Image (tube, rainbow, N blue to C red; front, side, top):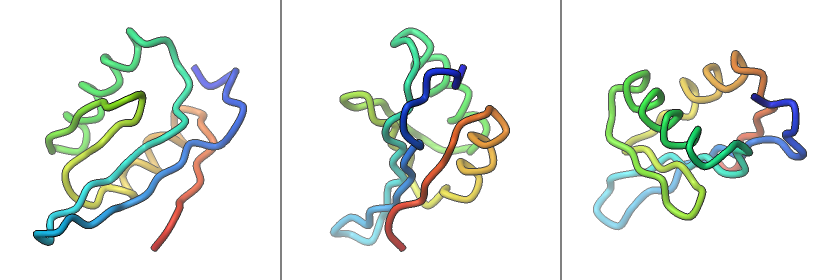
Amino acid sequence: MSDRQPEPVRLFFARGAKGSGVTRVERLVMHPTHKDQMLSQLKKHLGCGGTLKDGTFEFQGDHRDKLEKFLLAQGYKVKRVGG
């Protein structure tokens, strides 16, 4: 999957105005149909809701640690951005 990953996948957490937060995953290079499959797999793994917006995965809550472990196990390079 990650043999053509030019840059590390970026993980970051953004807190919303009402205190809720979103974990975002950017620069995950794969075929668009595989992104839908990956989204479903990650939502089950994390036990939360999520969506795919403009090629960026968004998950409800702070899941940076779990996502980092999962993506590293899949062979992706991961870079945490922000806090």
